[in-house]
Amino acid sequence: MPTVALLVLAAAIQARPAATPTPTPSAAPLAVLDGQPITAADIEPIGGANLTNARMQWYNAQRGAVEEAITRRLLEKEAKARNISLAELMKVEVEAKVSPVTPEEQKSFYDANKQRYFANVPEPEALKQIEMGLGQQRMQQRRAEYAQTLRAKSNVKMFLDPPRTVVSADDDPAKGPADAPVTIITFSDFQCPYCSRVNPTLARLKDRYGDSIRVVFRDFPILQLHPQAAKAAEAGACANDQGKFWPMHDLMFANQQKLDLASLKQHAATLGLDAATFEKCLDSGKHAEEWKKDSADAEKAGVQSTPAFFINGRPVTGAVPYEQFADVINEELGRANRPIPAEKAAPVAAASPAAPPAQ
Image (cartoon, rainbow, N blue to C red; front, side, top):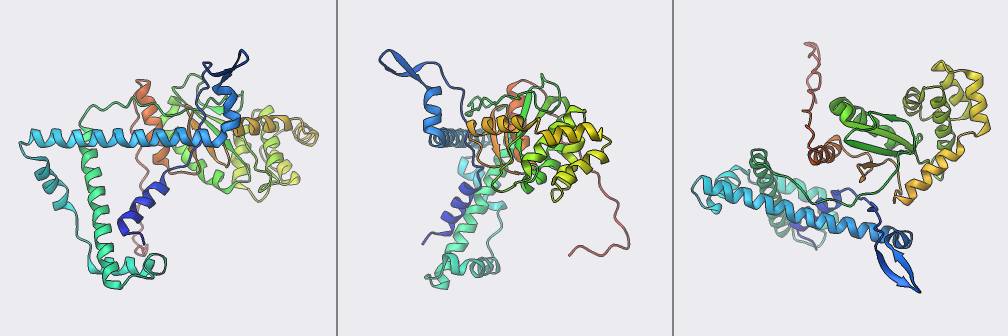
């Protein structure tokens, strides 16, 4: 029976984004058979996800250790500057600022998780485990928050480089200059609901970072789940022929239930495209090979689902929060010695006096 502390740790591990990047294959031989070298490029298709997952796990382990080393040094430095011991610093800045776990919170957690974790544990013992586990979680969170305030006042540079995937933009539709310090290559599916959900995040990133990022769109229709996605990908390419890829992109994502042939042609008419040219392009399958090539490149890069992103080759999988994208972009801008734009304040809507209070 796992303790609450272990459950907290397990949840933190599960929350890490899954990724399967493929580093640039080295030309150096790993073995030689009858005078013929076997290189990293030769074993990538054989090792597949096992190799790439192992690389990412090793990077995550290193990164976690480096981050902890930074935190410890920051805390030790602050304790020395204040002429107190590290234990005293932790007591003042961490322990004293963590609220205790109340009996009500313990009982609420117990009731919500009784069947899953505490079916064979007496309630008093379970409540003690919960108090300890949630207390440790709060301590860890406060320690991390305090360390972050110290880090913001220090000069910290990260040189540990993550595994990266070489993925070509392949002349696909893009927003942003070709020489932008950060390139985000997107593999997406017009019928995928998660792909639709991440589009506002990408728009927000473009609004903040401007010409510092280039966003490239590549197709990866998951045909087993989304049978209309392939033709939608072709519709995007046909619209691109007339300089209207991004308006078609936005319209198709906004109408994911209307991706049949008739609807795609109606979308083109709505956008003012030349109808005859668009319909001939779509009906002929002129651009079918493009999404097939994109899909093949995605599979070579280890992509198994959509949406999938490569930020300067660094994988980000799924419709993850804005902050996760921003963290990677900021780190890449730092590596390139480029300024990091401040987050733009979201517009604040005026409160209506007649509006009811939030529930």
